[in-house]
Length: 298
Image (spheres, rainbow, N blue to C red):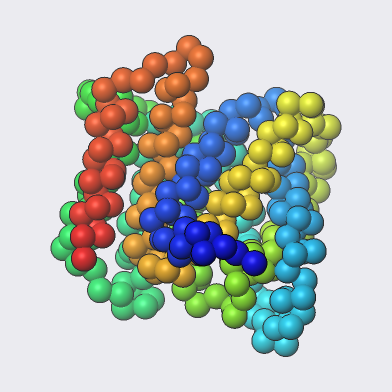
């Protein structure tokens, strides 16, 4: 049974969304440590397998009880798993091999805009002036960090093939976020467990391709540690908290918090050995937070 404090915390949309984005930001750092120690697709595949194995014993009764209701929705669950879980994760890890962190941060900043536009088109969600101003302000904060506080860097940035993967990844997650609004009648943990299995099965196709191309290799000890972190925090906790956040305040408002991912990721990298915390980190964070507060003013 969840305590009153736990219920209060789990019922606070801002808390669960900030924690979710913080852990997701750690996923970016973990991805850097994964290079050469575990392949992108194997990391993607195993994280969803671990998620399913951890959650199924806890949720199997609930899933079994409502299975007659969710079975007709198997196709929807599959495409949500393919876009928001397997596709998004793999494309993020793949992009890191051929594009820079600045490009990834800026491109990922388009996700809230895609979510907001999609909610307007699909659900006819009203977009307020405050939301537009907040979105622009938050995106500006992402750009400030991406160009390290100097707009001259924006002119000299080059775009690689990995940027295309980032655009696709951001679009995939926007589609997934919109699908969360009308999710099957399951609580957060059970619903996410129901997504993990198809996400894993879909990823096996990509694992097969990797093996056929001779790119598969057994993870190192560091690779297994990265998998453990990714499976517990960005996979389990972030996803469950994000689903809860969308449930509480809707997809277009919850999607705006995605702007915090590159900000938190940059802050984490800034305090790592050999890095430093600069003024533009603080400026970017203040702009993103200011944008979210502006959009949430009502």
